[in-house]
Image 1 (spheres, helix red, strand yellow):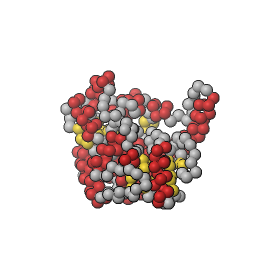
Image 2 (cartoon, one colour):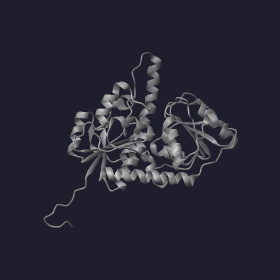
Image 3 (cartoon, helix red, strand yellow):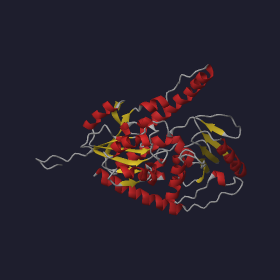
Image 4 (cartoon, one colour):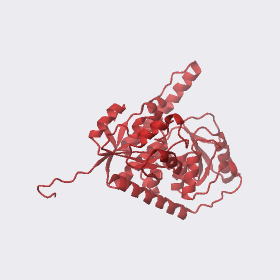
Length: 371
């Protein structure tokens, strides 16, 4: 009971800006992880329910194209999109704490200054000029100058800034009180433009243990399988997985919303929610992927992992940096023969210790930034 005559100290409320409305496993699950990490630290928080115009456009159900064939294709794809959006929306409804207010513009977001004491943006590629239309909202430009502004594990796709955006980047970044990037390369990009120290922290998904992820993971109907999860359609990944599966008498389960062909030797999945995605990795014998978060959850669940490292592929630098940081052997699909035995050279105790070290480092950063 508070002492009479003294006001009880009120807990500061945190508003999180992140890509929670992107229908992407990594985006939604990192949002879940960051929010739950803040709760673990005893911080009251909400994800600000901002509807980014770019995401609304990217995930619209039917796109008007020239010609009847593209239109029919769009209609068919829209059926998958509607079902997939339902899975994501149900996940958000049951697992994310969202603001009651919905925001559609940066002008509307300015009202959030009345509700939150400090703001944190991240993780994912919120600092990437090609993501979300370079939306200034994710740089917290709507936040009043006296409010604390924090980034956590912000990332880029390409590790360079376009020359024509450098001045704009500088004006956005220098307003932050605490800056954290997910990769050292990202911190190096920003370093010339700010005076503040830039911290490097792991993706929020690595801040939760496998036991914590088990709480929201779905049981899956498959067993004894190799799980293939690509960013972009990859016939090479399927062919590679099929050879391994044949040798080991396994099935191949392939998850991709944009299926391009039929193969009787492969179980194709187009519709799986975030909880099923975790379950599919948790229950797999092996994972083949080129996805950053596909690799993250494979590592969390100690899965045999092959990664497709395309020479100029999407996300390769991020995946390679992750594996180097945690001490995970880089089993590159392109350099290994699927007919050979899996190397089995992971030192999972060492990898887990590296994760714990990075987790401790991240928690110290968040505690200091939010105190």
